[in-house]
Amino acid sequence: MGASGGYHYPEPFLKAIKDNTIRANFVYQKNPDLVNLRMLVMGRTDVFICELNVCGFLIKRYAPEFDGLDYINKRTGSLRSFHIGFSKKWPKGESLRNEFNVQLDKAIAKGYLHRIYKKYGVITDFERLGSKGIEVMEQGSESTKK
Image (cartoon, rainbow, N blue to C red; front, side, top):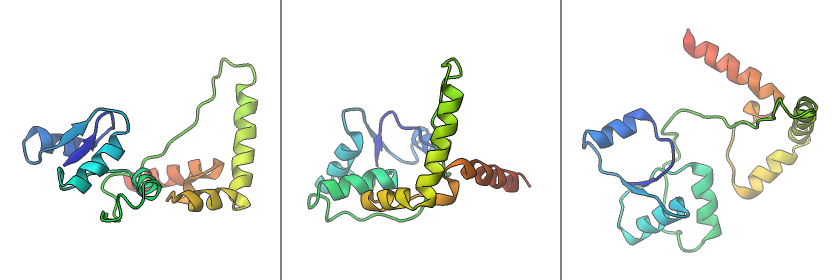
């Protein structure tokens, strides 16, 4: 199994490696996802866990090199979110954050972000984006606690 060094893999995956349930080959070099895809093509690995948007982009960018590859369209781990931070020490950090949120919400509402994501093959849950996304994520975490 191919894996990219430096990525955060879930504990059950790491435990399976430690217990020798699976054997993983971690790539610790420039462009580890690209290297792992090429190892799949060469038959040096049988499977590679890759973030859908990253590998989707690489497969399209390097076509036709990876035309013979297929993937399982199923999440293998928990849904994670990414955030942007603004320094509280910067005098205009709060106003920059507020303006960023306003513009992001406008881009979502007008469909700009959807078109950009579609163009580059990015798959996301649009309900989780923008200032309203915080509320959706908080509601989801509350329902999993019950």
